[in-house]
Amino acid sequence: MTISVLVCTRNRSDRLQQCLTALLRMNLEPVREIVVVDQSDRPLDPSTTPLINHSLIRYYWFRGRGLAKARNQAIYLARGDILAFTDDDCLVTEDWAQKIEQAFMLNPRIDGVLGRVCAYDDGSLPVTYQVWKTDFGEIDYAFRSDGFICNALITKNKSSIFNSPVMPIENVGSGNNMAFRREAFKRHGLFIEILGTGTFLGSGEDLEFHWRLLRRGGVLLYNPSMLVYHNNWLSPDQNSSLHHEYAKGVIAVSIALAIKRDLLAWRYLWFRCKASFYELLSISVLSGKNLDKPKLHSYYARRIQSLLKGLLGGILLAICYHYLIPKLN
Image (cartoon, rainbow, N blue to C red):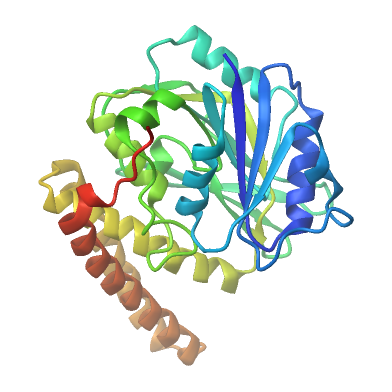
C-alpha cells in the first residue's frame, strides 16, 4: 500500500514552502510521492521555493481556477493506492502518513479516512477554542487574543465510523485532512468542479463528494490521531467574507440534494433557514442601536446575496448533477 500526498496551491508560495517542509519531516516510508498542483498566476521559481525540486515532490503548474479542478488534476496525476489531501496552509504531524496507512490497514472496509484539525499555535498569543453546538453536530473555531479567527477545525477526540450521509461536513471531517482509496474515485467519480474555492459557489466540493460516497454504500472513518495544524488566521472582516463564500456552496449542495428528495438535506435546509432568520433578525435589532449601520447593512446584503447564489447554484447542480461528476478510469 503506497500513499500519494496531494497539495493544491495558488499564489501562496510562503505557505506552500512551510507545508512541504512539514511533509518532508514526517515518516516518509509509506509515501510514494507528493503531488503539488499549482494554479498561481505564474509557475513557482525554484530559487524562492526550493523544495519543489525535492526528488519526492512532483510539481505541476496549470492555468485555471478552482480547488475542485486542482484536486481532480492531482488525482489524475497520482500513482499511489491511497490519495491523501491536505492544504497549503496546513502543517502535518510527523506520523501523519503512518496514521493514514494504519487506518486503511486496520479497517479494510473503509473507503476514506478524515482526521483531526487544530489551529496552528506558535505560542506568541493566547488561543482559545469555541464550539458551536447545533442539531447537526458541532462546529469548532479558534480565537486569538488579537481578534483573529481560525476556521475549518475538527477537534473531536473520539473515532467514528460513517455508513450514511451526514450534514454539515463538519460532522465527518474537513477537506484539509482527508484520504481515500483510489478505487473510491473510480467507483464514485471525482469532485464536481463548479463547487469549491475559486468558483462561483465558493465551497462544497468535499461535502458533496462525502455525501455521494456514503449514499452509494461507501464507508468513512474519522480518526483523531491523524492530525494537522491549520495555519490560516483571519481578521473579523476576512472571516465574515469567508463565511459568505462558504455559505453559497453549502446551500447549493443542500438544495440540489433536497431536489433529489434527500430527507436529510431538507432537514438541514430548514435548520439553515431558521438560523439565517434569527441572524438577520438580530442584525435588524442591532441596526436600531448606535452601531456601525453601514457595516451591518453591508453584511445583511452579502448574506442575502449568498443565499440567492446558493439557491441558483443548487438548482443548476440538481439539473445537471450526473453530467457534472468527472470520471476516473
